[in-house]
Length: 143
Picture 1 (cartoon, helix red, strand yellow):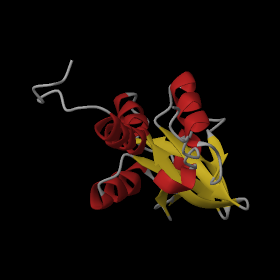
Picture 2 (cartoon, helix red, strand yellow):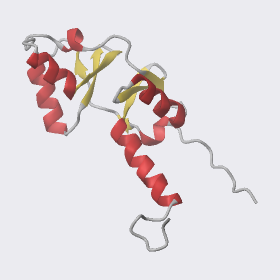
Picture 3 (cartoon, helix red, strand yellow):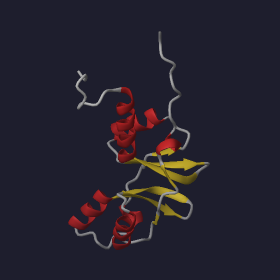
């Protein structure tokens, strides 16, 4: 007998809603301060209501290592950010994040910033799913 299939979770279920964002004109010091204050590693970069992309902790480290301490977030953000709708399939988005080798997806709802989905969010969810469906490796009856 086949088990009933559950509906595929949507990005909205796992994303961090109402993420902090930073203006394109902000400097590296402001970005570092925001990341430290909120214990985050990815910040959507905006110009008004428009999402330009995401700046990661790695981007900030690289810019500083290259001596570009004076660059603003608009100049640092990479082109072609991975942007998805909040109703997108979690499996599709996670797979595409892996294919693109990106650490986050910016989530929009009706064209406006609604959240951010990171590899950390996906990994935590995967751990929950694995624990729900498989025995613990510490269990004596695990294979």
